[in-house]
Image (cartoon, rainbow, N blue to C red; front, top):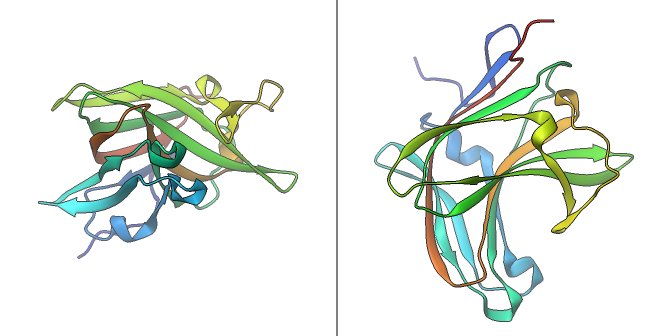
Length: 179
């Protein structure tokens, strides 16, 4: 029986995105700095059964970023933690979640450092995410809550040209503490 590539509830208040699922890559979309004239190229690919966010960053035409994202089904109220399992290349990446507030798209980000070739789990409380809009901090944004999240994604940016590769294994979204 094939695994579902949808967001799966594994127990109450614990949702999993299994990025080892063969069909998971079709749920993701990429946005590169070409939307602003840049020349960076990034995408999500399956390589030897591993889902990878990979490409090349370019600083030509004021470029320097690449991102991937996927839509999420509405999450329940009260989830407070996102945990990711990744293997990096030594670059800093952002975990990003997207919400819509009064019709406006707002990104909340969390920067995490990777170690080349090392698989790691990064656990982030929702209140540690910082609101941004087109790279600018939004200091008066509302607190991020799970039921607002509509997309999840990863972004890499650099002020120098560089190849990048982030292996993605799993995303868990859950309530860390019972209330």
